[in-house]
Length: 446
Image (cartoon, rainbow, N blue to C red; front, side, top):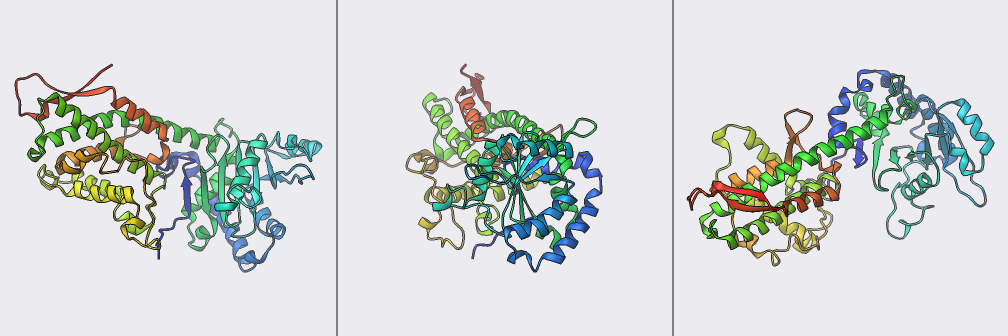
């Protein structure tokens, strides 16, 4: 059976994981303790209703569970009933009572939501919020599609979708599959008051509205995430260029590769294959960061690039005498096993789907027949470790080096980095030395 490591919070690329795990703790909300009272009230409600929740229909669940929680979260809500010709979200969230009263004049129309800051859609307890296959495009059977369509029908920017247990936050400025999800019962059952902050401060009324100092909590989290993405994107470009030099040096440094650094054709071959190898590594970092390759599955995690980059970090940050040597091939061997898995897919390699599943990547990036030099060339651990560490870690906000949150980046960021690499060309310093591969440089062709 596939084993999944479960957590109460699941950020599907709406925000930056780095921001959520680190920077958010310096926000004013994380210095408050208002969430403790809310936790006690919601836990009491859940303990009273938990035996009945799975049996309640949607209306009963709204009355006995959703309405009390919205009250605890200080929301001013109203329902706009659907008409024969128009469907509307279950709830509209208003800044205050006067905004709600004004909306009543437009009930039964889209204009009802003009003064709202968010919409809400609720379902029966535990119902699947995502549907695939034949139901994927059916808004009546796919709640995630339904809330996304509603968000683009009305003026509010934010949407809340819940089946009582899972609570999701959507933003119309982001993609349909981007959301932030909290498993409320898990927080309650484990008595996790500390992480309950992520439910209370993200879903309460005040999170959507400007505070007295002009801050809007959710907008701050969005902006902080975007700022982080820009900062690491800029820093990553420089790191990728440095990594390219390290990999090229590694290929030339391995005697059995029989590559002459003074030979222009050899340099061009090395540059081409270096770029392919780097893009493979970037692809893996991106796919694992976005959850396309699921690190929560232990069997995959043991083969993953995530595990490899953490191994490298420990060595790089440890005593000098324990660091990787240029004569070892451990890292390349692990990478080739992972490349093979991505290229063929897990099923083609005889791995049962109930163990873990990785679909084959058909783009040719990992195809050994299309890149024969990468199959026969070797690169020592020291050079590969430096390159992996450069791609994996970065300095952010003036702090020490931490792992880059690739979930924040978009595929266009990787494309931009790759295009930037095309502007550089490997060359050697003109010092008369034919053997010092450390003299490899990169210069712009622009």
